[in-house]
Picture 1 (cartoon, rainbow, N blue to C red):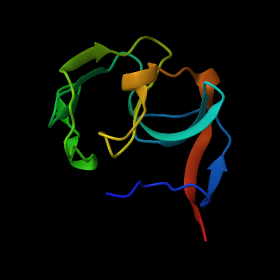
Picture 2: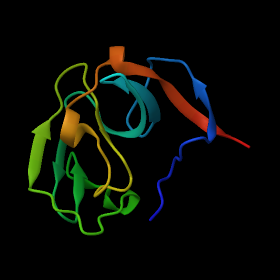
Picture 3: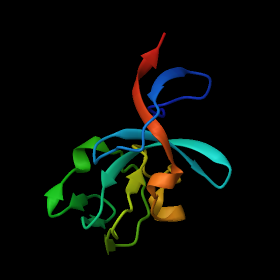
Length: 116
């Protein structure tokens, strides 16, 4: 499956640090600008397996692609002032499973819509 966001496409970004679970955000990590979806915020518990994602025991799996995902069971509580982000294509995404939590300082803004 193709990525939701592609290189060389243009998006309107609202520069803000006021973000919440469900927002698709732009952030800086290791000198790279990245787009991912916030799936869990402060104090949330996220659980990921090879075919399921639960946040606070609510199944959000339908929004993600699991094709050939090799994922050890992961269950963590998001600390205060941190966010957990995922890409929609889990087998190919480099996200909080790899680089850990985000802080508000990492966040540049949120995607509002694609500009044609």
